[in-house]
Length: 214
Image (cartoon, one colour):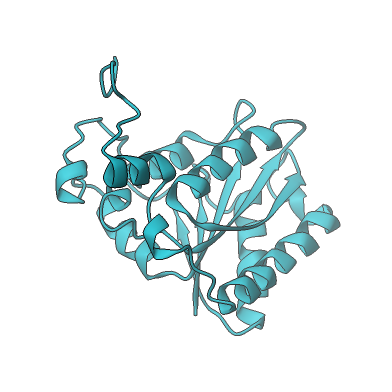
């Protein structure tokens, strides 16, 4: 079993990375192979909305995201970490989410993977992070662990948040235990309901309006 931790912070070695490392330690202590992936050192461009991946199942943008796709597909569990920026996740986190659209049309390769979220903020904003990622998990039919939120402002302060440190380690353990159960969505529901209804009944939820609007 492999658990991947992704730190969606533009800063190296920040508070989010500390908690993700703690979660990975919890997964490792319970038998998982672990890997940490950071985005501060990656060149990841935003989705350009070309929609070519709907036909090919692949993203045409040649950047470091091409190396992240196989890491996501290979992992059994994925821990997503992000600091809170303007009451939500970072731009880097949103780019990863948007670029996962290519996997959605490539046999939905994230389906049945266990995913969890860790966020760090100085005050409010954790619910914005959770709303974003819970929708992301739902669309891809990923299985969710609990959500961990820590409070810190300055680099390294998160280590003083004993609750967040302990909760992160427990999240890693929880991820391994959930993944070990090998729960899977019923095969006929390998895609989101709106796509299932279109495929099975020929009813498009976009009837009467453009597929996308500017």
